[in-house]
Length: 109
Image (tube, rainbow, N blue to C red; front, side, top):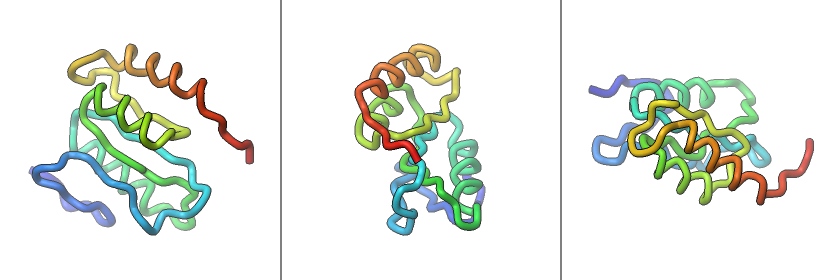
């Protein structure tokens, strides 16, 4: 069962949150990786409801493999990572994220 949280689209057969077209330019990109759909939706709703938010949840995923793919696709500044992800430990996934992030260049604000 999925909770009805304001500002979040619900996907019965697609358990990840896609990029919103209305996100502010230059926003801090966030990938949320948690195997609990409710947690992903709750965190995404929190960031979506921030007035004048400079954050954009670019994707929410449920496995370590999906988290790495999402990071490769979106090059987020922030990865919110559940340490108990299925398939690979969150610690190993975090190490993979760090290796990827070292190759990206971020402009300082």
